[in-house]
Length: 243
Image (cartoon, rainbow, N blue to C red; front, top):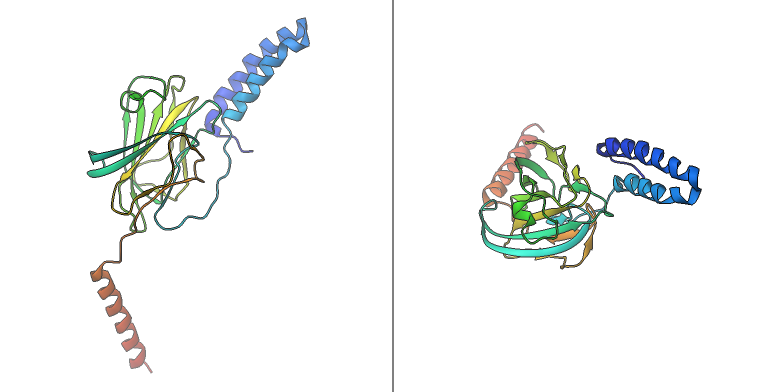
């Protein structure tokens, strides 16, 4: 399985430290080295980066991370969405894949980093008080937006990594970063007539595979329809004239 390059430092350090200590205990009695081998395997596995591919329908929003849904909260007026919104919180344990993925196709409008605290990611106020990084995405394909993803550090996680930049174009499920060692990821979307939340609290989800919600897709604009019809008519007239 592919390994995230962002974890190379931790993997090399754990290999060096656990290797030296494990060999020392193995010299006394080889079974004493087994716990260090188990920890080393866990560190390597933590940075696994599985390939995720699936087919999506228009309006689908995929999970931005692996983990367990811990909250689904509705807001009458979210300051970042500019109206009614739904926030879905995902808790990532130390055994989950920690890669973060884009929930939709679109362009990154803005990013904002907040230097905060390190409460346990399951704490009800961790989303507001902890260190975090927020991506605001303008979705494609007439999906209502914006769509927001927040990377939130936890009690153990002390390093948020985001490889994306403002104006980057991302496809749905696109890998853009990770959070090291336990964390929380939030998906915030507009709440409209026709918005469907497809997950429930306590449900396990997989980033880039689980469909979290679907949004109504806007009908084609009447002006665009007329413009397309006019262009088609002009093209037909041009073909007739050249015959």
